[in-house]
Image (cartoon, rainbow, N blue to C red):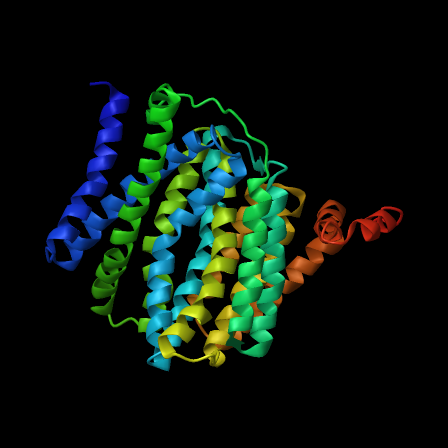
Amino acid sequence: MSRDRLWFLATVLFVLQWIMLRALGVALPPQWQVCLTGLAIFGSAFLLSWAAELAQLEVPQSLAIAGVALLAVLPEYAVDFYFAWMAGKDPAYTGYAMANMTGANRLLIGVGWTAVVLFFWLKTRIRQITLESFREKDLLALTVATLYSFVIVVKGDLSLFDTVALLGIFVFYIISVARGELSHPALGEGPAALIGALPAVARRFLTIVMFVYAGTGIFLAAEPFAEGLLATGKSFGIEEFLLVQWLAPLASEAPEFIIALLFVARMNPGAGIGTLISSKVNQWTLLVGMLPLVYAISGKTFGAMHLDTRQVEELLLTAAQSFLAVIILANLSFSIREGIALFMLFVTQLVIPHPTVHYAYSFLYLLLGIGFLAVYKDNRNLFLARFYRLLPPKACKQKTHHPPA
């Protein structure tokens, strides 16, 4: 049996072992639960990365990567929807829903983006990743969702109105990426190339099976992985809010990080960071937008999820970080210096989890974002140009005579 076949079989078994244990209802100590669910998530991430490569033969690359990003955040949805559902019956769970959502979003930018550009630099000594032009659609959706998130901060609640607005942004995003051009990338070596050499019908069938199988593995493994981490962390007397905010998202974000790094290992850094951008769009639109809907169905009410002072503070910090991130990426490039800056801002705010510190960092993120626009002309022009594309055609023609300064 060839190395590629063995590699493929091993990843399938990594996922299968947990699916079987879950089906049999086997109870495990927390340490073993973390280990075995971690293996399932790891195997699922490999399968998703190969399926994503194969999917690019059938659909536009941007849509394939958006699909991978959506599957990869299913565990995050499962955990957060559970908290939102319980919040409909007990308002105390609202804090856990916000903690999990804000922690996952900040991890994506503060750790994920930096990990991709750092790994690319270690592999090639190239200090910057240049994104493909079709990433404009991802960044436009992320920018609009980020600006809208400040509306939620000002309101101090999550309502069904927010569901309509954020799901509208998500639908617009999916439709726009689905209109991309079909590409035929070279699959190189590995299981993806092995499957890609099969007849078209067999290749397409296996691609769909890999997506479904990996998505099932991630969905079944993420919550037990998070629970195992929580059980271990509680023994150290750590606050539950912080456990939900930082330990639980490690399970849901692990597949995205692994997929992104695998793309970089195959010398496709644009797809690597593109996966994380798509994940951020998914979390900032579909995930946040669905929370008040799940809450309303559970509580049988049209009322909003009211956020307390701490939850508003966490949401403001997350929105401010996203604001700086979209401005940095406005010129479709991401350097190691920018990545380290985002990482240091993320890490240093964790040292003192105090409201005053969080508000100070929120102000700093906003100040740096505005400063970036003022200093870097390319970022400023490209950032503003995205909004001109949203104007009606007649308005766009008028604006072409007066481009943004």
